[in-house]
Image 1 (cartoon, rainbow, N blue to C red):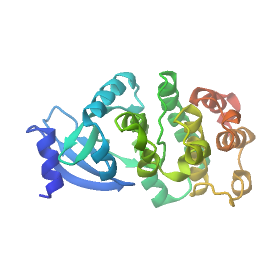
Image 2: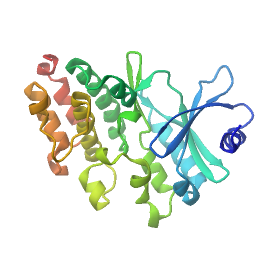
Image 3: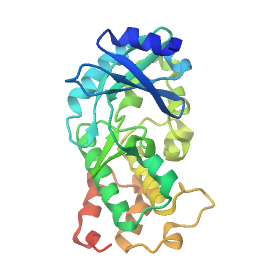
Length: 269
């Protein structure tokens, strides 16, 4: 057993066994831990070393306890806990059998329009619940959209802000670079250090939509979605308002964007 796995098992306690390592997400290593038969498997996410060394793990654990209490929704995967294992900090959530949207896109490329809209609607439903509780996701990307049979779940909501609050103020800006996928971070946050918020999440929703429809995230040189795919006007308008670089021109939150998806004309895809 590796030194890291042994440290994680020691930190998780005698009831859990770290069974296997799975595909990493960005700079984070992921492990699956098995506990008592009555408990679900845990996904253990190990944070990068530069963040782990600077974090107050007790503050992080307290933040996740508060966060879990506020994320009670069927399509949000709430955190289970956090801790320190030697020099690294980790957090846990329930392990979900299935795949991620990232893996699905890698295997299949662009999605059919109907499937794209269904996933988009489910993601917005999950985010709308979080936004009503003043919880921005902060790191929405295909790796955090889970496809479990017919269910679409959103993971790691609010984790970025919880990590930021557990770091000294002088290095909190390092969280974006260490954890977040640059293509999914809104321009004002990427360039100016703006805090996370619902409009930042809405930009990420637009990138997610673009990638589902084309197989690639948008770039400055990329053609508009309408030039790549034949889209109903309502969906083209939703994408445009998500991806605009001006925060004030985006949908203010997920509930507002969900209204656009839930209109009667959205069924004609």
